Length: 466
Length: 90
Image (tube, rainbow over all chains, first blue to last red; front, side):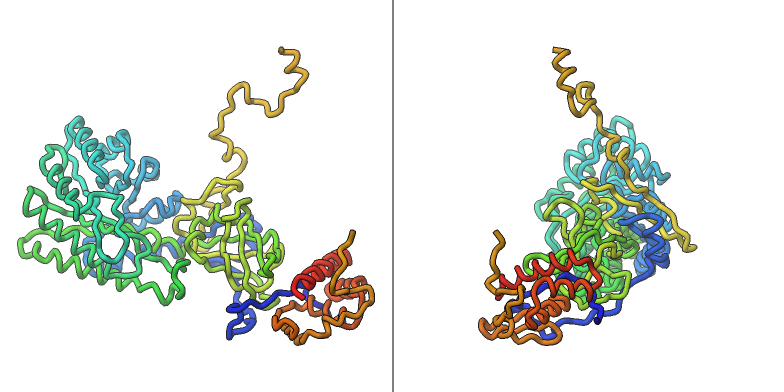
């Protein structure tokens, strides 16, 4: 008797609109056996499943390419490593070794940068909630403080006055470029006059000196012209305030927002067809900034330093997630489904990306529409709601990528332990850069009042005590 | 009480309803009575073929168990689930 590949017998009705001209596609024999040069089987055996695997070489190359793209065109450039994108210590130190400043947005991130040995003058301190104590430390350290609102301006002024220091300050601006949804909740608005008011207040302050302008026009920006427009608006504002008040701006910070090669759920076309190359962004940004600040060279003044804060574009494709199938099923409508040991608890970006999912063995059946669910006991834990995959089996290893941006920071300590994060070094050796959590980690912040030390109360001893 | 299948599958009874279906070797099924079409996987095709030959549930399950090298209990319960699917659609 001919051997059949086991799969429970199943009949699936065709529905109008579901039949397409491609019919039932044969599985492409596409699978990966290595992640960044290390065998998948070895990684799984040594570090367990799930686990994040990161490439040092890839990350360094991306950082170098970004810096080069802007330096070649403009010259005086600083890359602020966006801590919130991936603040695992080893990743931050790779970025710092490549010359990046720390771009931090909270007391925790500031303290982490200092803990890693980043000097204050190489920290860009953004964010809407800085707090008095950390601002005082940042001022003493000589960090670059970017003001978000008037109360913060007053607070920094008061601290600087008390410390008898003159503090250089940048203003975060927001405005409408016409290309992206304005991020009007951060910084001072140009159109409404708030930004002019803040500049005027800083100009009048004895202890604060406005030396920088900053704005961040959005995220995953697919139109390089948006940055050109951003720079035009910022430079126009710069010339206006320099003309009216005793102000000299020496840094223009354009924030981040450069896209990675990930697939946004809202976009039908694949990323290779949608995302412009880095050179187009660098051209738009640097050419516009040169044009808008040419007047300075005629006046014998130095052009402003360009600061950019790219996180996603630098790190997203430097990390993959190894995960395993822990169960398979057919949904009532006939669709295949698999449950993975990694879900949105680890892959927060699955809420807006269609991540690439790769098999690690040859396919042994036709591709079919499949849903991939995570391990959480939550209906929203969906890694891919629809992806063409061959039949999956219990224990299959899958590789999901790119996952390097915002997952090692936005992941949740929820229901499951967070797994090992592995770094493949430049010499192809590898090590854990963040250890898997265990019960001790999960419980170490808990405190039990004396009357809650025991879980179940013995009814006899309770009666005696009464 | 066990629900009686309207298809009368298994227990030796030939199923006329299944003979009305146009079933391709690759698992494409057309039902001329309703105009509906279906896809059935390879094991489903194997089971349908058995039923069309008049084999009963136990016999088909046994053959499926041998063809796929899976325990008879797994084959039996899967065939029963498959019958429920057929009842739903046909």
